[in-house]
Length: 617
Image (cartoon, rainbow, N blue to C red):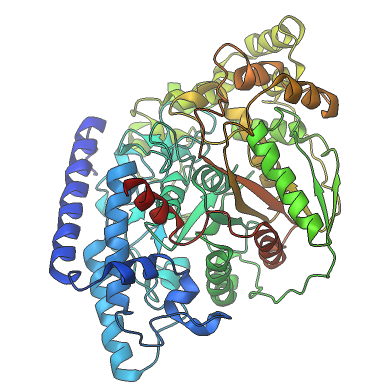
């Protein structure tokens, strides 16, 4: 029988474990990193993953490990990112399981092998890789923020395959970032649910946005995005069930690819409920450039073909794609729930203008009722009424940790999406998500009527009714769609408690299972992005349908609206690049087109550290 500590006891123990690991990291730097010059440190942080390994990936010459340039070793690369990750952790609380010591040892082994043979070991030789605390590693906790999963020794001897071998065995692995608060449909806690765009949980506390510590880095892959956005890692992997890759990268200024389910392996990736099949989480790559996302995708997809028969993957290696010279992009500025803020609207329009200058066609269109996708998402994620929160599973099942994907483990009949929260305190960001499913049917119906006919908000009323309604829709046939990931840049801690439907901009493409990229575009400007009477009138004129009255007031209302361009000055703003089903490689190429059209703009390897150092000068 597994001992289950109280949530406070588990948190204190994990805090101690992380503190000791960080202290060890400091000692490793003192012992091994004294010979690393500031110029070498800057050069390593400014290299993308492909450049770290081999300059032959680049058009312009670039120092790398393979070229044996002075100081360019797997060990020094690892040490530079250990230092940067420690700084990121101190600033933003992003790490859960910290693996500095084994990572450095592995880097030293790679250097010894390279010295002996003159050959690099795989395409990720010497590249530090960070993993969301959802991906199992041998002898390492995978808690997803649940206190009851801390120090669960049952998983120590499980075999490890697929995705982890592609990263762990062929690269050096630094810390594993914390999963953020994910908030799906139920009640008690946070980060583990993977359905919220906050980044906090009872076990590790709240992660902070690298650009503004008063704000969240997004969720649920927020720790990963925050680490990449602050140059604490060159490459990472997260998951996306409703925007969990894209929203954090939008908030933290990095790149990501949400693949369709079945392209990337997920066998050793834990979920909050093994029986939840309606909308599946997609594992995907994250990076500081499109090149990082492309390299990670190539490595994983090429190796995944061998795993297809045993893991129900699509047996497709990475495919070479050639785009036509002239592309047609569709774009929209409102998702049907809430109009994009001036900052997010500007990011889309600047992208459109940049593409037009390159000769591409861009047309504005009205998306086919994204609110229906949100209805479907709410209906599916709340189908069990989240009864496990008020009626926890029987003791025998409470003692069983959730299985990976092993059907031999029994699952209690009342284990629903948020069952793992059980005794942990509920985060405020789950309030609205859990409200509808927890209400009796007649109360929910009455509340929906009041919201629609008294408050005058038929959009939000539809979501209250969505526990039983199901609907589907199709997307338009274009080369790609450009749109805001969310109506606003990064929100402050605690501001998402009644704004969970704002994730509709990303949820839409989980429901239809599209391949989607995220590209950072700009930074919030207090002068360009203020809510003005002119913007309000333009918004009303161009909006094809009215959004949620309550949501728009919450976002832009004169009495404490959460969007404030002055307070958000300098926050990153991204854009989604949406493709079709099984369209991952094409989306990567489309991301390149967008990235090149926008040009240098303060995002990419080493840019965050340069900005921080400039502030200190």
